[in-house]
Length: 302
Image (cartoon, rainbow, N blue to C red; front, side, top):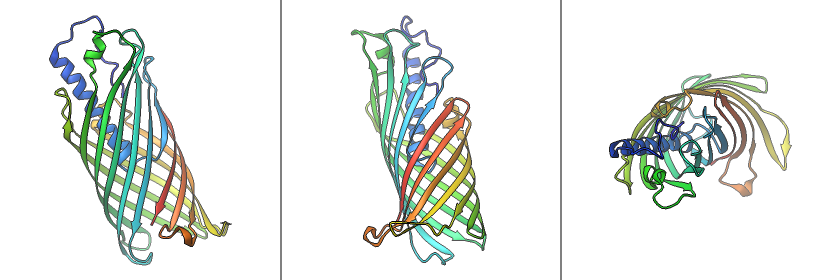
């Protein structure tokens, strides 16, 4: 994700037009890919993250995501259809201090809507499979925040743009679960594929087209307590996961993998919140090399 820290002696050199096009196309595709992986797919929740570049120009980004889902049928059914979706907002800032004075920042933001579904199949007492097919629409835009005089060469290198993209997101999850008294223990493996296509943009320098992969493996535990709060039963849960990245999001110079330690609390909802069945509050810490972050999320099951 060291996007702008490239081998340009930027401010004083005459950069060829083709190099400018490649730079902006790379930045746009890296940005949209990161948006889809972190804002459209089921990778992380709402949170704040930092990527520590080798130089002074660190990357900081925030995600705000609301996941919604509804599972049809009784919990005892072996095959249950599921519909789900996400509403997401993504905000990334990278300093431009190494390019040329004055200092500034490159900011990329996106609004994303994701919808789709699949089914949960209880194969046997301990194994389940959950295929999904989601479709995400994102509107992303880049702005260069830099106090510079007219004719500033960096502004010519990184013009503002806006783009609309559609992303196809199929995934498959296999989960094993075992009960031990009040404890439920689980092992989960999930593969997600993301293929993005540009729908429209206002710049001749960019063409959105990318594909990425995310593998996520997790160990988890939850406790079926008899604790109650305002009439709702409480269910604390914990998890430790590893995310492995592939494709465009890996080629962008982002981390190849990262870890997630999370904990949360689920609670059944009172009747006046119908049709919401359960709400869950989750907090997580992400880490690996230059990437660190904290995530806080709220999810609702209908």
